[in-house]
Image (cartoon, rainbow, N blue to C red):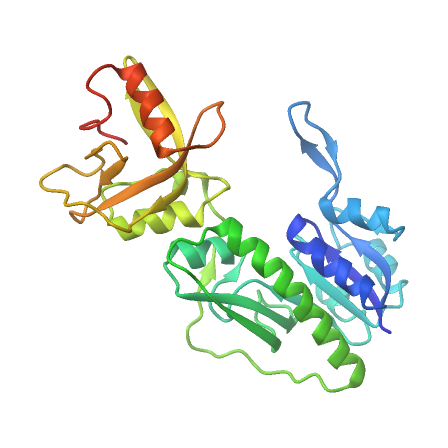
Length: 320
């Protein structure tokens, strides 16, 4: 049994915390981001990890920084064998990395050294990667640069979304961390330095990236939709009478694409919501969401939008 400090914030992190407790380890403290305003009332809301930890009666700490002498002294006082970090959201200074007897271990949702950084799940899909995965590494002062201990590869289907991959890697990663901690306890955990080739960085998603640019290729549009679904959601605008309306696209498809002909990029080319793209091919918008409404399939959207637009329907409408 290891004496563990767990550090995590979003729902992605919760399965790992749950599995560590279930494996019999002594989770002596949980660190999470401080409660933040959320919801319509913007009331202070505890993170999913904090809520889970408190329900499990584990002490929770929510410092705004780990750089102060007080925060570092408090962390050392936990007398931990190891810290396990899963999407915590704060950089760990050297004093924190050095505090646990066996160091700090991080679960990262990519095949390192590809997609180091904040948004590896989204970036992998947006880039059209054929595979992703989860890795457990021993942390050092660099950004996701430490040696890798265990890894699990996952092939990516042509239509998988960031939401589906997020949930799969959350569960896979939890099992991976438990295996790593078991090996660490036995003294059999092997550390492999990351390759110096193939390094890429997964920058945080910028809101400006969410607008769909139909002048790009159909594959690029499809990958952007998948990589930003369900959050923040790729979107386009369409003009309904005098009003421009923003519409999110939560799912798209390239399967069975019709011939585009000479249609300009962004033009709806038929009633099944196929849209021409810049490479002369088309992408189908499968699931969409109008502002203030629930997600709907393409057929429901076309019927509703056509009724608002008039007898001409959406065919020939330019989306932008």
